[in-house]
Image 1 (cartoon, rainbow, N blue to C red):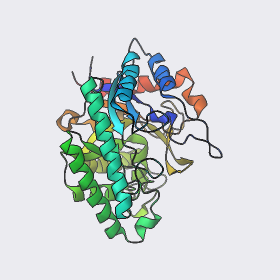
Image 2: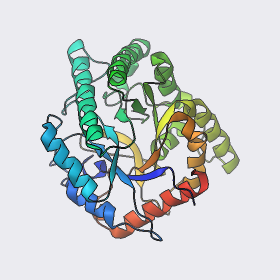
Image 3: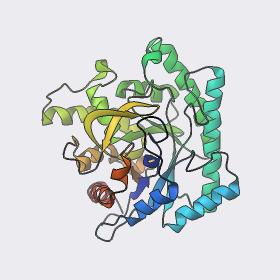
Length: 342
């Protein structure tokens, strides 16, 4: 049986879209997210690790090394390695827009520096065994970007180049998560333009999420780049999917297993984006195992050692249901059995 890639669960579904704004549910603590993950088991198999969001209330990005080591001990004590980390690049956290003013871009770079420091502490502690540091453009929505798309893309590219140089100097790699709500990253073609513009594949690559990249094929925020039209056939879907993955797979260094029902969803300040669904959602549009294979082809050549589930903005009741996690774990095991390696 395949033993790689390792199977990780994400901690940020306990945070993203949660809060005290109208219509939001309260965050779920790190320890409780770890316990929910640890309880999942399918045919004697469990999650190997977790991917981790570097912001409050799970983590203070300015935490001391001693405090970070205590967090690492907590995670390891639940039986998990630490994998990919999410840098707090957004306005309202540490960072700010990668296509903004010099001050805003400086904050973005500060967030990357903080993430690299935390990564180094976890690495030296022995808790972090694999993974990248995730970023995006931290510019919500595409309206401002569209005012001068070439200039705004050029600014994002320059910010990412600086961020990648910082990360490379610390022995880390950055992965830009393609998602329709992030300016300059909101379509497969615009994302490719940014990756090629940066041109530093050893330091900055792509993070593919099944839910988000499905909306790439539909051209939700970029109709001019749509690869599918409403009412598409199975044959048309797989042809479009192959075109998208052939373009982005060479850049892909981090991978999220997910399900999507073709709808968008938003909560709080997080703009509308691909709606993550439970792995066994009857309305799910994706054959998770088959779709994953397009992204995981030659994965070891790109340094991929683990895959992660992303259930961003699941309702708390869904997160509290043990069946949710067992269905997710089964989907991840199916992906590994089909496309994994020894």
